[in-house]
Length: 273
Image 1 (cartoon, one colour):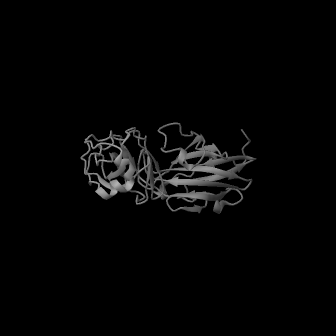
Image 2 (cartoon, one colour):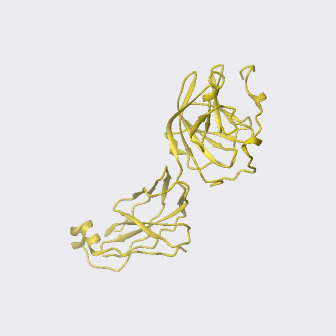
Image 3 (cartoon, helix red, strand yellow):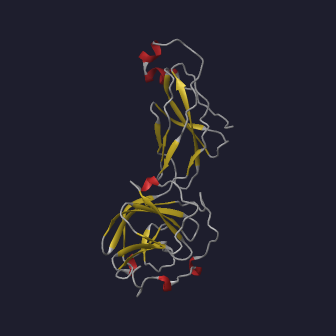
C-alpha cells in the first residue's frame, strides 16, 4: 500500500471553491471514493494527467500527489476542480509516480488512487528535416541524443532518409531497430516502444502521418512521426527517452567506434521491389 502523506486543506480553500454548495448539504465525515482510471501523457518537462470523474454529489475537487516510488511517501503538488492536471515541474529523465485523491466540501479526503501511474518525461522536437542520403549525405541522418542532423554514415546517426526510385525509406543500421506503428494523429499517440515486430530488413517505408519507433544502438528508444515528404527530404516530429533502458531493454550496447556499417544492404544499384 502507498503511505499516504496528506496536507490538510484549509477552511479558506474549501469555502473559496463554492460557498453556495457548502450551504446546501449537512456535515458528514464520509470521504469520497478514490479516483480511478488515471491516465497520463508523457511530455517534454511536463506530465498531463486525467482520470474518471467522481460521482459524489458533494465533491469539491481533487488533490494531486507525487513520489519517487509507488510505495513511497507522497507529497501534494497541486489541486484541481476538474478531472485533469498538468505537472509543469516534471523534469526530463526523472521517473515520478503520481496519485490522486478526491475531497468534499466538509474536508473529507479519499485514499490515494491505487493505479500504478508513473512517467519519465523526455525531450521532443517538431518540424525537423533530413534529406536523401544519396544527394545530401551530410544532412541525411539524425542523432537523437544530440538533437542534431548528422551524415547518414556518421557513427552516431540513429536513422537516415532514402529516396529509392520514388519510394521513400527510413533506415537504421544493423545494431538498431525500427518499426512502423501505423497512422497516428500526433506524436503522442504511441506511448511505449513495442517488445516485438521490429523490421528484419532494418528499414521501413516512410509514409506521411505514420509514427515509427526506433530502438537505438545505445539502448534508448525514440519515436518519429512523419509530417511531410518531398523528393529530397522528410519532415518529422520526434520524442526521445533520455534514460537508458526505460520500458524496453536492448540485448547489447556497443561503443560508437564498434558499430557495424554494412553498406552492402543499401539499395544502391538494386532493382525496385
